[in-house]
Length: 448
Image 1 (tube, rainbow, N blue to C red):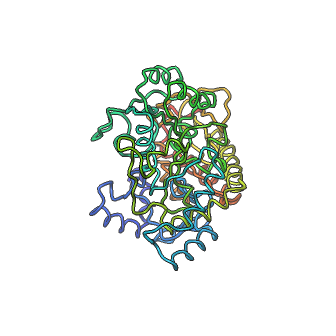
Image 2 (image 1 turned 90 degrees about the vertical axis):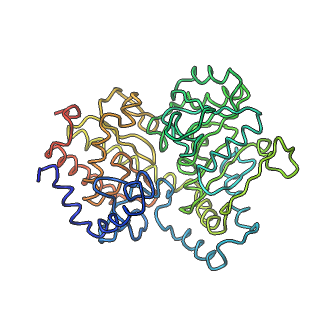
Image 3 (image 1 turned 135 degrees about the vertical axis):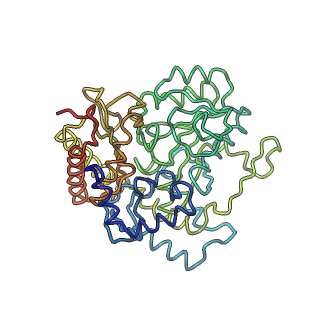
């Protein structure tokens, strides 16, 4: 056994129950035994039994400080008492009525109260569905077909949400342009062919792994309206996470449409489109056949999800959870940058309540880590050269009781504490030290 195998073998020994489940899962699930493409890793991810607050536990009894947080859905932390109570109460009343109900009205009212764009709200079952609906509404409203999006952005895996050229996708009506290039946006929109311009809140991938500069984001609504194209902010990740009004409220952007998910459901599945009332006319009974849209969905605003959503959104109104998550995340981010520097490794951490770890040459002398990254090299930020180092770091952190998304993303909640940060910083420092000792940090990343 080589030194670089030590942590892997140790992980397997301490995760025997997860190994057994992983081996069984491999019989059923094609994605290396996982039901989600990012829940994979070498040798395997832990199989979790329960979670509370900032922590979760696996089948072997291992405890983790959790920085996956339901892929960003849990700004309140796991199993918040108010959400749990609401779901329990609703479960005793019924899971699904097949009818309209009061909770869906209260839920929409809370969303409209927080997001000024929400003259209308239409629920569905997932953020991806919301983006699909936004595209359809924009086409019906404008009479155009084409969609403009940004390279490296993620809006879902359906054909017209996937990256241009993705295998198996038919998205010949979709064009991609580079993020932060307003001239490229204008060149496309001036053709008069585009129904919708869509961008993620904060930039590409999980609130800005590739950040969008603020001037650029604030220019997008005006450029879109200049060419009679609708502008949609995809707030599936950032909605109610950055601020009660989402990313648009944080930076002062006024879109025509916004899509939401994740935090809006308090931990249960949800998607929704919010926006200008006139754009939603296609859904009104009696709309002309050429402009009509039929929107069905078994799980749209179902009572269980609505109960969780009302409970969670009621807690978002005052902005306290968002402030708490942001403050603890910034403390970790700043001190983790010191850890990285002490370890003699090139890179940096940036982001607000979702903190991204970049490994590579630092291209900026100074930058605002709330909104900017240590590099402007998009491929480098996406992990093109050193992504495997993040994967290795993820394994080291897991073995030390810290669960992240591929070692390169730390998703915070209001439930994370000073103790969590201290333990995570210790685990990070120990992991980086072990990686240097085992030779898994490439020489290009070593500063000293």
